[in-house]
Image (cartoon, rainbow, N blue to C red; front, side, top):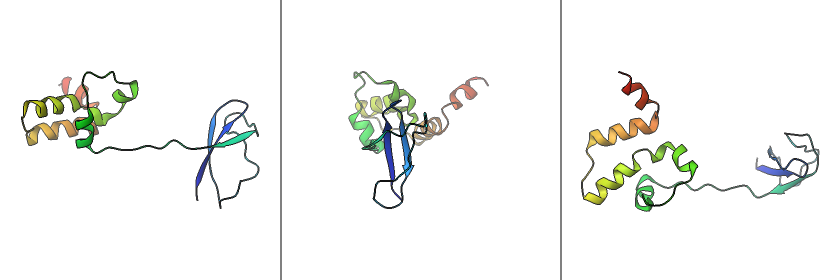
Length: 114
């Protein structure tokens, strides 16, 4: 079943609906305000890069948005970039520590409290 998104004309919120078939569904209402004046919109598309693509496109001088810092995959990206720039191959221990931080960022605080 496809998922369609609709924007409410009253409150401008976006609601998502599972839709059976490809026709326009009936009796939809805004999940936020209950309004019935909804317009179907094109959903946002995400593209995921591999870690090597992220590393090759990383520019430490570029200004990063807040979303960059919320993405745990970016933990250690600067360190990896600096190693690559220096021509140093990261050790297995380094890779393991970075991966542990990416999977559990709060671990830094836990480990520093010891």
